[in-house]
Image (cartoon, rainbow, N blue to C red; front, side):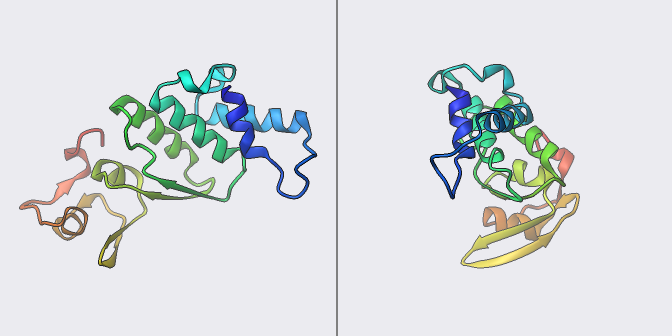
Length: 157
């Protein structure tokens, strides 16, 4: 069940045989609410859509009460609506924790980044801005675009 998957994020590190059931239930509920999946707590994880599964896995990570959230392609393989829901969750988490996100999607990268690190044989750091200019796009895509791209020019941005 969904609540059981999220509860895996509450497994104690020191005494695995001891868990306060009420505290775990509260953390699970809070994590599910953060990702807008509380109404699916009793659902079978295997019957969820890909985007719903991704949000439940994000809730499992949030149940650990992290200070840093590491995400590798959190929107890969999900439809555009699910991608928007996942990015909305990440927007709501901004400022509450550090989020390090790996993505190949310019749309995802341009939505809510503070800095872009492009890795392709070398590492280039680009400061946050409202434009994805030719230099950044050369590092992101491997080639330069003729004109700078403003955030509003990208779909979903």
